[in-house]
Amino acid sequence: MENVAWWKGAVIYQVYPRSFCDSDGDGVGDLAGLREKLPYLKNLGIDAIWLSPIFRSPMVDFGYDISDYREIDPLFGTMEQFKELLDACHRSGLRMILDLVPNHTSSEHPWFVDSRSSLQSVYRDWYIWREPGPDGGPPNNWLSVFGGSGWELDEASGQYYYHTFLSCQPDLNWRNPDVSAAIQDVLHFWFAMGVDGFRMDALWYILKDEQFRDNPPNPEYKAGQPPDYQFMPLYTADHEEVHDLIAAMRRTADAYQDRLLIGEIYLPPVRLVRYYGLDLEGVHLPFNFALLECAWHARTIATLIEEYENILPEGSWPNWVLGNHDRPRIASKVGDDQARVAAMLLLTLRGTPTIYNGDELGMPLAEIRPDQVQDPLELNVPGLGLGRDAVRSPMPWDSTAQAGFSEREPWCPLIGDWQIRNVAALDQEPGSILNLYRRLLNLRRRYHSLALGSYHPVAARGDALVYIRKSAQSDSVLIALNLGSEAQKVIAEGMSGEILLSTVDAEMHGPVADKFELRPNEGLMIAVSTGAKLKAASVSSQLSKT
Ligand code: TEU
Image (cartoon, rainbow, N blue to C red; front, side, top):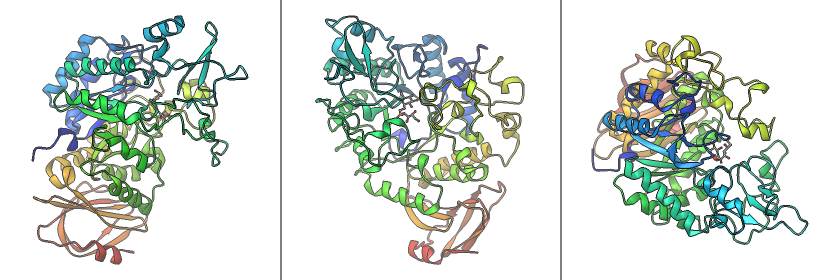
């Protein structure tokens, strides 16, 4: 393979550490548990682990409220164990990406404790403090993403501080260069230890309007939507100058070899791709969440792929996400059969894919009774369907007690069908979704076109979505996905090739020429023979339903 950055051909796997594997029997996953499972991840065929936060934290937002950026929380283990894990990953050829939360700290972080202790504190200006508004209330109308005003009154000083998320997650003041320097130091600390990259949390929020202007009302807001949608986040997110701050972090990453920066950014595609930086001096990969929220229709998906491909800046590299610890599980969204098609889509699009742990088992959302809710977002803003506990259910490893996840009751309920949907059981079934993921990951390694080749749309008609991945030097693979439950006929005159993989029949192989049929809910991958000329237009115009 040519000399390209490792993360371009890589597949990233998100581990939610609380829910991966518990080694010490406290019901919560930990680093030693993850280490035990490295052979599973290696065998699955992924290249890099992104670990949601493991730093010291009061855990009100399950680790996204950090009180020490340089310590491992005892719940997860020790620094020693982390170093061992990192070493074990590297020995087995896996990279390790950590989760940096630059927008806010926990209110228990010593910086904030000092900041709130007095108006004269050297840390006072590390956070966003304001005098009350003219009516004595909050300084302006900025709302928290997690419900209510974004401003919290500090009785002692009579000033308010700003928090994009929970009130115990005060926002850092990125207008203060000391804050930027402190976060760069955190990056240096972990990069020097050998960490391969960072996923940076809530990156589009870190800089706010210098004049603290009110956000304008959102005319499209409807009751039932997240409460902060009432206003357009004009002055609280996606600030023009945020790119300079990100570029500074990128320079830090670039001081080391082969390090990766990913940004968590929920924005429309045109705004999102700006986070690559005008001269690609931003993050390497601004997470592309387009598949998380789109309707599951061939044309919708074809359009969003094309829109994204068309606006990617010159030289930038795409990426795709199908699930994470914040959003509903794909299998619950599209059903078991389509979860397999979704896997083929994720792992054959151009760009770096990120798999959320458990999606390779087709995990559905867990059932959470009202008295089991722990997610602070759901507790703050109940009943809108925003709760995230259901997507954070522990990995079911086998059919023994507690699904082999822990010796005692897990911190969050297991999925309903864990006794049959678990790693040990799916491992034994040749046609299971787990084995489908393994095959897909294996094909990405074998076919240069899948890992690094170009993307060519062919057709999106009815429920059929067809595209080709081509590698200039070598192979071409045609991917045909049936997003519905009726068979589809695909006519591709002049095309001949070999079936590589079907989502509905693990044994299916053999030659195809000129036309083929997609069974209900079937995704097919075909290695196109060399020399075959596929004319996208002719395939598209002849694509027909049976
Ligand atoms: O999420 C940021 C974010 O935008 C959230 O609003 C997300 O959309 C929300 O969880 C609703 O699904 C990141 C983390 O991924 C999330 O787990 C944290 O709670 C949040 O930051 C605050 O740190």
